[in-house]
Image (tube, rainbow, N blue to C red):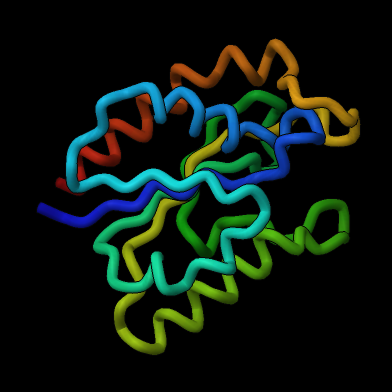
Length: 152
C-alpha cells in the first residue's frame, strides 16, 4: 500500500482561504484508509518537511486563485500552482513549493497533487466560507477520495 498524506492548508480566518481547514474537519469525521495520514497545518505547510519526505503521494488541499470562476474546483500539478496573486507572492504556497523542491533533491519527494477551490472572498475576516464555496466541499471530498483510490 502506498503511504498517502493529505495536507490541508490555508488561513481559516479569511473567509474562503479557509477551505482546506473546513475540508479537514469533514475528513476528520470520516474513516480513512489506514495508509492515509491527515494533517491540517494552516499556513505552516512548509514547516513539516520531515513528515512530507518519504511519503509516496501527497494531496494538498487549499484555495487556489486561478483564472477560473469563484467556486470552481481545481486539480493542479505542482508546476500549475499559482504562487502569486495579483502580482503579490502567496508566501504560504511559495514556501511549500520551495520545501517540495528541497525534498526532491533527496529523491524522497512524494508525487504531489493540489486540490481545492477558487475562492470568492479572500478579504473578509471571518471563519465561515461563502455559501457558494462551502457548497463545493462534498465534491472536493469526492475528488480526494478518488485520488486515494487511484494511488492505492
